[in-house]
Image (tube, rainbow, N blue to C red; front, side, top):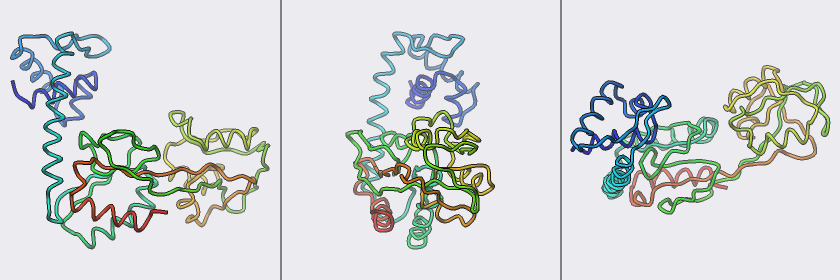
Length: 283
């Protein structure tokens, strides 16, 4: 039994299909199928029930899954501990943040850090998924939700004010109305965002013009005259083609949190980057 095949098994169990697991691991689907069959033969057990909707763990599969997760956690813990003891300002750091935050707030700080520490390679993932710090999907995560994981060290980094924007020179709507106005808002997957509810309350007669989960896309559409958009002020205030609309009450702001796994607290390159981020952005 090979540990690498157990990693493959975990990927299939978590994703539910060979195709999704293959994409996650960077392998081909036939390779995934072949190695899964080899693992089942080595164990003498059928680990998955093949159904039209995907792969479902058998009772034997559930038993293997529980132990394989513990093996994975030990392996990742060893990797984090060794990484945390590194002393040279070299190596790799993977960061995760939202798209607009990465572009407009993080990128200038990362450029400054790179100039000071050119041997540190930084990978910034602008992704709406909540990446796992325990599984080292990211080393440093910036997000709008507090961290609740017991093995994560975190702090509130800053509060971001938001504003309602329209193309410069456009007709400003009045609070409590909004008839004839078109809104550029989040897609339905993010319909629970505070600014979506605020727009419905403040401009009940306005219509949805377009949806996007990308704030930069919303800003570009707003600048093009496609409608009103709620944007983070560090983004909206920098765009000359749009202006803020005052409805007597600003949209709700959001707090941004930063977190990393406790095993990396001695990692010098992470500490240096975090100190710079806090110095430049914290408020």
